[in-house]
Length: 306
Length: 184
Image 1 (tube, rainbow over the protein chains, first blue to last red):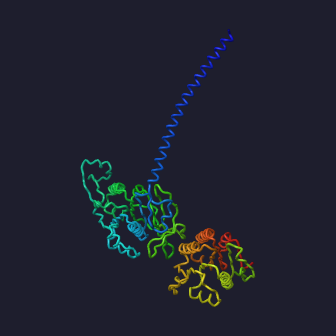
Image 2 (cartoon, helix red, strand yellow; image 1 turned 90 degrees about the vertical axis):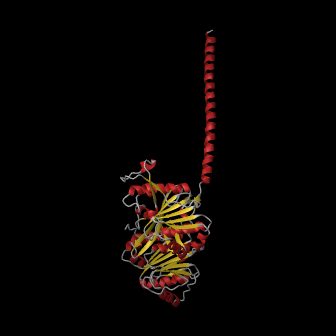
Image 3 (cartoon, rainbow over the protein chains, first blue to last red; image 1 turned 180 degrees about the vertical axis):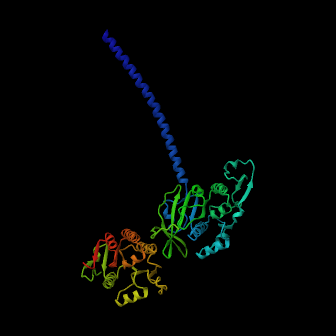
């Protein structure tokens, strides 16, 4: 009897154990199902990410040697700051990029707040390029603006008031420069942010607000944009107020290193979101055909900061 | 190719055995040695970094010694700085100043990359570089040349007169497979 009871107990216990196990198995099944669902989700997400990566395109500049500084190129649609001192090669670099793309049928727009259209075309001709042909084809547009062309609309009670930090009592809604309605550029050069900033003298807060709006404006258009900004010859800061560096997706810096009686030009990709790039200063030369970058060539000589 | 050169201290150097050679001698002897080297390398592509004579004078000197220059590309760092005649010559690149090491580096690397076979860099004379450049800059420049040469099947011969700063020669000597000091 006792034995039977114990047997029963054992059996009972075993049943309980079995029940528990089956419950566990049941839970594991659920977990397995959950895992399967999760795996499926992960797979879907991964495939979507892969698709996104495939869709993420990169653009080249066409400047000899420069594109080798990148693993793939500049992400399309980026806002890129081109910083450097006077005569360091910024304008030539930008003109060369637009010449490269316009020659390939892409729409390019050079917005100049400094030099005249005629002067810029002369620069291009100096390097053997044909700006007239590109303009006639509709692939290149060069237009000069005065910094005072920046339009102001004052609006009371505007939602944008929260962004106005200036002691200036006027609430400003700044309208970035207008593009012609039917012209949708693939590449835009804004030359220069320094000139634009000059029209905000005494209103640096408004300029910062404007710069932010300007960057967002071009983001919406979807073009890849190059903003030039003037700095010292051997810069340690790369924009007027610092906000431009922060807003920009990429920063490319031109140097003009003083060496005794000569100046040596150099270039560096300081940052480029979404793209792997070399992190060193390399030599550049201005040849008869435009700028050439030597991606493997170190620059020798002292880097003076004045 | 005649493989041996003899320096003024009668050291025989078999050029083919070394990737890099540094020769330090007095100025007069160095001139003889460098011309001997150019004679040996006449059939090889050579880039000759000239830091001593103006171009016309160098050509005259080589011609007198019967050295063929068909396979030599000259980098001339002296003619322009002294205001000599730098009219268009097919086989010479004029550099404005011996302190423009970046441009010199570009010329050398482009030469190396454009010739797949074995080629040579002759630098004459290293001591002149010291006048125009700081020591650490020179060493970085030499290092970059070696990196370039190593990647491109190039051999290096550098010739120098004795300089006051022996430390610089000693530091540079570390780069070379073979060092020949004139006073040995």
